[in-house]
Each structure stands twice: as C-alpha cells, then as structure tokens.
Length: 71
Image 1 (cartoon, rainbow, N blue to C red):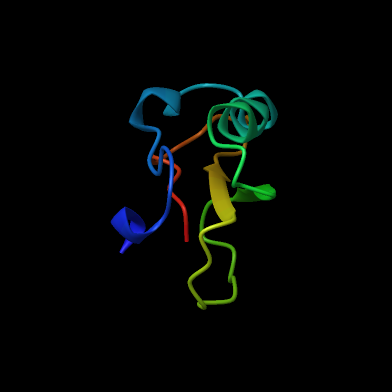
Image 2 (image 1 turned 90 degrees about the vertical axis):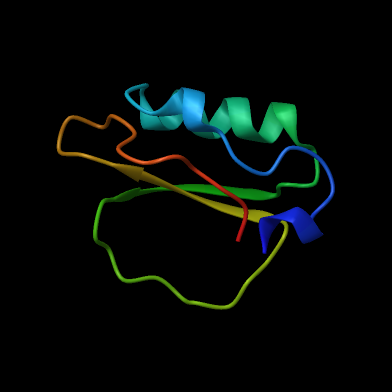
C-alpha cells in the first residue's frame, strides 16, 4: 500500500538507529510525512492507512527494530 504515497515510503536503513533521530530523518526525506511517531515495539496503534504518518518502532534502548514505512 505504501506505493500509493508520494515520495520515499520505507526506510530499512534506519533499523538499529536511534528512534528520535530516525523520525527526524524520515520527515526530512519525505516532507509529506507530518507525523513520525516513535513507539515501543508492540504498542497498539490505530490501523487506518495514512500517507502522512510513519510509526517508528523501537526497542527498550530506543533503537529502531523494523523498517519504518508510511501508513
């Protein structure tokens, strides 16, 4: 589904990076992303698809654990 969105839609290169820094990189690389939210992995989130939102899943050390993508 992320291919429906303009600009860059997935960031596999951010896995293992600091989640807060990753969120800033995402917003810089795709100005269509308004909301890049850092969350502990496994947190329940709303399931509606949005091109302007990215969930940044992190471990207990604040490191990205899976590729962030629009949605």
